[in-house]
Length: 148
Image 1 (cartoon, rainbow, N blue to C red):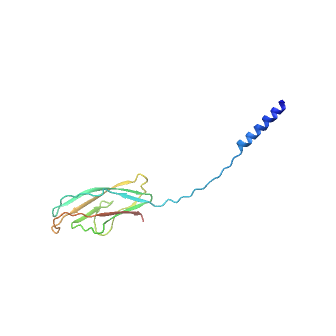
Image 2: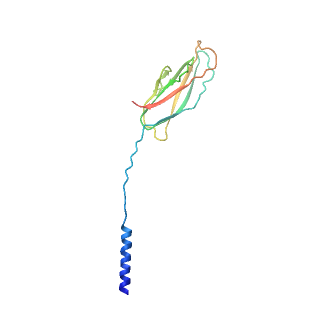
Image 3: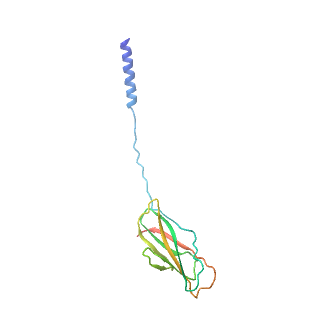
């Protein structure tokens, strides 16, 4: 009887060990493609204020840029925008550029990472005696693209 119990226990132990060591596994390879991505946000609108002939007003606007590749920032007057006064923006080298056509403001900029990057873009308007009195608004279009 003792032998039977011992044999039963040994057999039970062998079955348990065999079950415990029996397993299966599989390795799965996951592939993903991360695309170039850009985003930009700005203040929505800015107010220059009253401008007399031969007077110049300046303000700084902040733009937030996100990019996972090196990037460049350009600006153009949006379609239908035709300000009567001289409008200039300052580029990354602190050079004032007159807005006509598309102007490159920042170039060869590094990846921003998830936190993005805040950049200041000064804008100034200069009135002339050729500007008719009135209230004017115009739209600026900022574009972020991959650096060349």
